[in-house]
Image 1 (cartoon, rainbow, N blue to C red):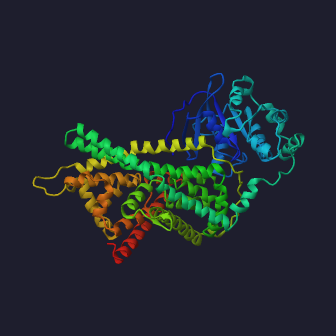
Image 2: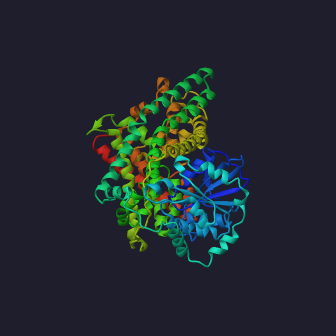
Image 3: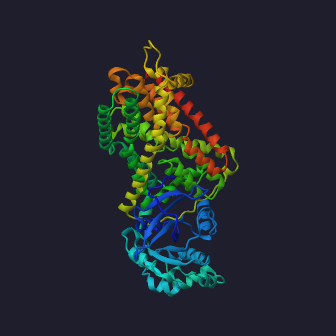
Length: 624
């Protein structure tokens, strides 16, 4: 995701948030910046960066940069390297921070303070945010912010970021000139002493050098991390997720569909019949509406992923799946990038930068496209809604069951590809034990969920208003010109550039049951998968005659496609070659064209083979 949510000025003083993973850094960032933030990539790499605008108590505006979480300044993965490069002033296109807010998890000071020492040795001015102090108190850890400040020789602010406690005090602290002064003297004092000894002495001085009691999280983990019970719970959670994508989204989807239909009808009254009427109604409104209607389903999917991430459950899921992932030559660390790929393969590929093992990282990148991204969801929803009856089976919606099966098919395909790579590479046979921190469970904070959903909705709508709309208009143009010759009896599109292109492609895709309209819609779908829906809508609107032109897309394909064709297209999209943006992300991550070309080739072959088998079996069973 590289689109900016809100413009942030590049000038002004730069404050960097630094901390261990799961220390509450993102919640602090959201609380300090609100909606004044943007999501982009660091210059020259594809690690996601979040930057925002922070206003101090005195009204000064500062740039706030949320750096990737790290355990040390000796990077083991690409995202940790970005944090080190920014702090050292080596990051391309970014100046060295003027001040660092070091976020400490009050429940795990022993590990967090080691990172603080490493940052202080860099000579940067530091302010400490003692976060999750309420959670530490409930666990019997009374961390005195003033005592910690005296030990560190640094200003310390007690914060509970998810409840916005301490944020005003932190803003006020940034107005004090002395906190911006150089910290070289403190940095020099740290150098000759071992970090472990220093941290231990600090904890002993504050009476915090003792073992934690058994926590509620530990008792919950006895169930959620159980090899059998935990796996069943994870499978049920994922199953209910896909049920909700269909059942919860039905009403808002109908509202959007009706609204776009009404808009097209109203606008059509003011535009005389002709090419401009067709451009606006059939091209712009129908194309945008055909994709926007699936926004509720995409947001529901993102909502569940954000809740699982915010609650601390995702690392548990990775641990549960480590044995399964190991059987195909990966580790559980690949799970989170692969789960992110269900939303979009691009951030999933970006997330592989947290995988230290190069071979595991490359394999994860290669199979990430097989996770069913949200761009496939509009295609699945259209075909399932048109060809799968809306009824219950054993108390569950049949349409949701079919959607769940499609997601499972993508996962199984990815595991098979990883298994093949394990069999044919020596490195794939090595066993790499998974070591991963399990953060405490948290109730997901509504504000953080809302900000995450808002950012993703804006990105999606911008895609509709950008590349999708542009390609829909281009397809309309190719489908409308040249006009039919005199005496032509067929639909005008058959005589256009797009018509001839579709007829040629149909010869390639005829063995898998695709007609020329489907074949033509696959071409702009290479830029963005969801555009296949608006492309089909445009093609069918221009190829229909009489009353058929006013019909929605679902009834049209119900009439003109066989069930075998619909099943074949579903099979195609399980393995469909990736959009151009994903292949470009692969190229940036792997440093060349070799891996993207291999990925595009094997995905096309898998898609064609799966569609061919599906279509032929369906025809044999009488669905043709």
